[in-house]
Image (cartoon, rainbow, N blue to C red; front, side, top):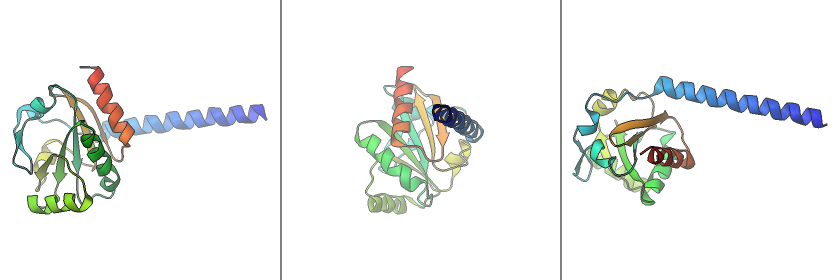
Length: 169
């Protein structure tokens, strides 16, 4: 009985290592590429504020969340991003090809979420970043990309990435 339990435990650990390795490889393959001078490029949010990623990430790590209203996985990730922002975490989101500003604002209101949004109605910004999957999360610290991931990410996964970026500052 003990040997059977050890074998299952060993096989479980091997499976977890393989899954983690596969996830890391997929993240590396799908990782967005920051365009030149991305940190100083002015971005305009839905509420009319002009921001730069360098300024937003200077004091504390910034989570940049590329999402879309038509993205099925984003339905699960968006509430967690809104929760992080409500807890005081530094968040900026980019709505990828989700319509004009009023349409995006209505979508946010229907979902009951509130966070700063840059509307990338025609996908220009996302194309410059080479974002090929939604959702995509980029963590910046002091204007530098610290980590990226795409696909579903848990609340704790996002929180851990922000904490880790803050430790390196």
